[in-house]
Amino acid sequence: MKKILIVLLIMVPAFSIGQTLLTLKAAIDTTLRNSFDIRIAANNVNISKINNNAGVAGALPTGASIADNQSLTNVNQELNSGTEIKKSNAAANSLILQV
Image (cartoon, rainbow, N blue to C red; front, side, top):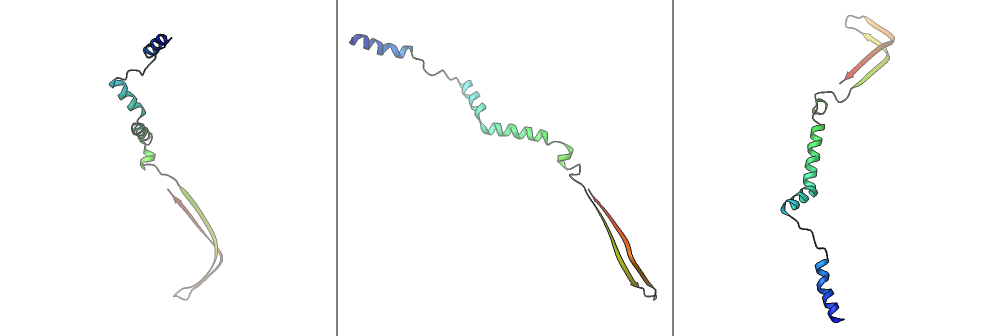
């Protein structure tokens, strides 16, 4: 019984599976694949490719606005020549476009 136990203890490590052999190339490939700095750099390259157009570079307008102001006012003016100008509900219009 003792001999069988000793033989089993000697033979078990021979049949057990150990670690796989790691070559230098496999280690480098695994490191490059799992490197977050390399992933971030690759994402930055993709972002730069997407952002390389006239609109992002500032060649195109980013927005436009328009305003239309209309008002009615009463005008009472007395000129140096003595002429008086009186108008009620004088219309004024202001149109502004910004690009």
